Length: 209
Image (cartoon, rainbow, N blue to C red; front, side):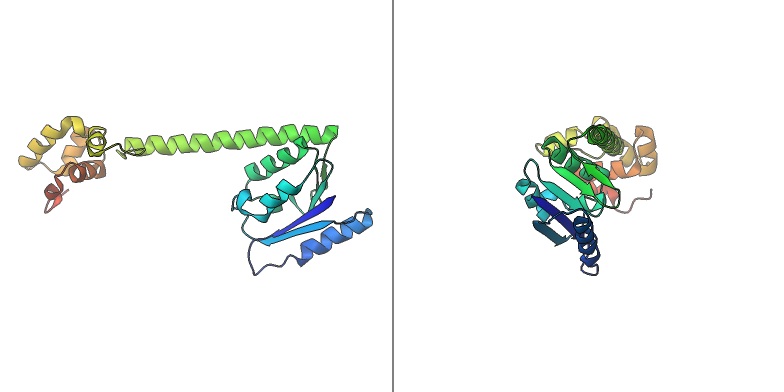
């Protein structure tokens, strides 16, 4: 069977141009469109939460799916590549009119599938690297990562925990919290969070940083 998928992101857009383009393409090549799936939804929404997710479950070996352009399948490169790989591994032909791609059971498609898989893996690695960098930065700033088991474990994991007695001593001596932070090698906000979770929030009042 031959399916077509049409998507626009907002109600202010119309799908008529896409349907017109697909209809003309099918007529020129003798295709008959058996089913059209149309929806108005952002490509950022997960495939499983779109009509496209239901369409995937309908497609079978030997079926053909026509779109005007690959970007209709997803907003990110990773989404599109994973969708194409899914289809090609199941011998489902994807036709993208504007890119002039016919991805099916042929050598060109297999080469493209390899390139798509590589591109998707590179993007996954980049996302992973950015996530690790963000987590490392938060950890350095004293942010407690993960779900704390209890109040005690959260306090003990804080970078200021080991110097808790010195912090109170320096504060009693009138040392500014900015100076205490520098002595500990942590950010000033990290010290502020420590004072709050350790039950010393009163020390934050009326103090100059």
